[in-house]
Length: 426
Ligand code: SAH
Image (cartoon, rainbow, N blue to C red; front, top):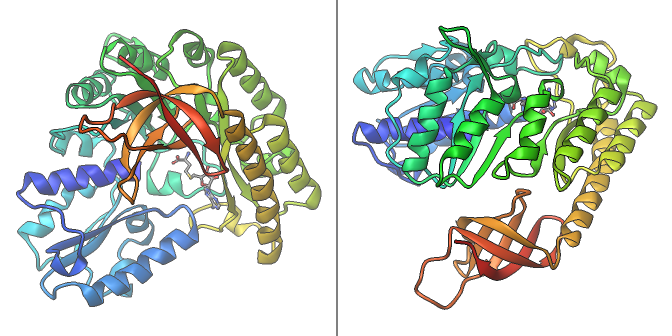
């Protein structure tokens, strides 16, 4: 979502005749697009602001947009007095106001709902992977999570707006469509005639577009994985066989205190149904270790579920107390050294499962999407249908590399695969 917001901010400024620079000291405006989900992310923003302040031209405007702006509000101006703007994730379309009035202190952390989508200029060219936001905010209110505070309550965009953004992206270069939302599979829009549209309807529309070859969506909440959506994995080959469906913990007690009121039986039943619908599907998850009150037994259950489900790729984090959340007030916080030891143990286990899956891919041929050159310029980076990175030697020809290619996997480690071109796709 932040990558998408970053594109829109850049496009908005380019629309006003500005262009990008990689160097802070050259810039006339410096914007930090921020994440507040863990305390470390927020701390990094303020230390980066300190560095930018010293490196920038005295006349350059600088400020923050996104969730840290929303979290800090006016306090950001107290911490960094020469900051010029602080704009929340739903008000960054107001950024041009600071260009028109550079002496002002621009503060707007309103939850403007979908207003930004109506006001932002259309992007002229889509990247190969187009992010299409279909809803913002979240109503689940997990007790650790700051997102409902920073991004507000759930609101779904009009079905027709999502479809026309998808068509526009496809017409301007997108091959892969990634539907986005904090609670993306909770997407629900009822039109004037009373007809309700879900994520499965959007997937069906996107799949009808000839030039769209791959479809995915993120982030999903387990109990919003309704049967119509699971069925899409059976009937729609363009939908990638990969799903991030965070479990967070393998302990029922911890899940209850996280206010994630699904049973482990229900979660595993959803995965079973997904595997029936699409036998080659693979699942990834997010985990939080060291949630307040987490015992050794609770943590053991998290290790067990990771082994049982065999997630091929996961994100795991130490619990970080956040403002505006219930869990930050719980009294039985876990000491840092225990959190660190649990994270290391879980990461070991997840890495081993990931490595095993990657090694199993050797000798298989997969249709992959070109991402670009690697740092050396000698290799091409492709993405497999499971979002693994695959490195391919650049052919010695002047013809451009195929955007979609059948690639045979030749080697693997935990982090990435190596491959060679098999037969090029049409
Ligand atoms: N569904 C949300 C989740 C965002 S946060 C969205 O996509 O916007 C991504 C992940 O960060 C969560 O799944 C969770 O595992 C982790 N996370 C959220 N709050 C956290 C906290 N307070 N401490 C540690 N990890 C956290």
